[in-house]
Length: 131
Image (cartoon, rainbow, N blue to C red; front, top):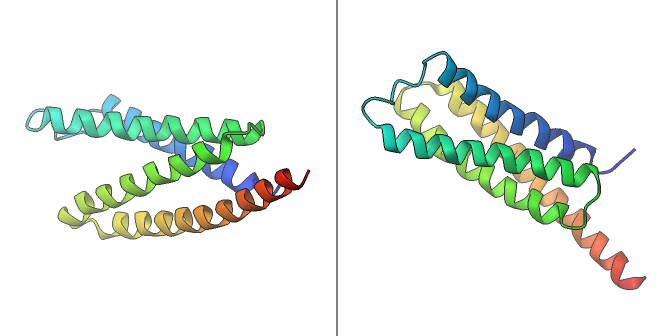
């Protein structure tokens, strides 16, 4: 079994979830900030979409074992970390604690993956230098 199957699944599931939730929220008119804070929410949605696309791209690169896959994956984890912290602040301000806890758990998983992938990447570089 591939060692990187969990990072691949994580990238696809989280990436498609981010894109899907925003498409759903926009399509069903559930983004209440549009009239009052249109620039702020538009740029936030663009950043979230870019994060989702970066996650999906890193999942594809990992799947096909592209040599830059781990760099892009680690970058996407940084994007996700920022998004989770920023979004948690929004939900905390609106007293939606279940979302804050959910994002906190995803953030913990993200950090674990970051540490694990760093170890895999270092071993891979060492092995490549020995060959």
